[in-house]
Length: 177
Image (cartoon, rainbow, N blue to C red; front, side, top):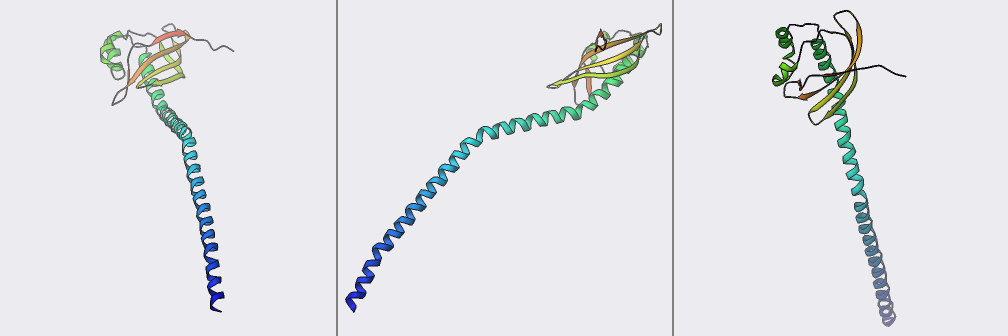
């Protein structure tokens, strides 16, 4: 009996060893596949992550511009109302405009005899800290004649507010179909 029991225990050792080797080999292959999948996923996701960051940055910039645009339009309405006030006295006019205009260019703002009747935003663009602003303004001259002009100017952001950098340019405007 003893010799048969010994034989039975001797025969199971090679089987256990083969099972252990098979399980170890399968585990090793699984780990290799897992690592290669992780590395492959990591290299493929990098361009997408960069694109996602770029899109987020652009979205933040556009959101900021939309939020600031209302302030810019309000500033422009106040500025143009004062610019086209019909006041011809240079001192009075410059005293009113100094709130809006860069000090170095204030003397360039000549008397405007026309008055603004109504105004509509046409184009507002931001590049860095400068805004290019275009409004359509219906003007009434000293003879009560009406004309429509596209008024364009640049304004720069300062700590306190926007500042008009130069005298606005005027061009005739007609809305065409």
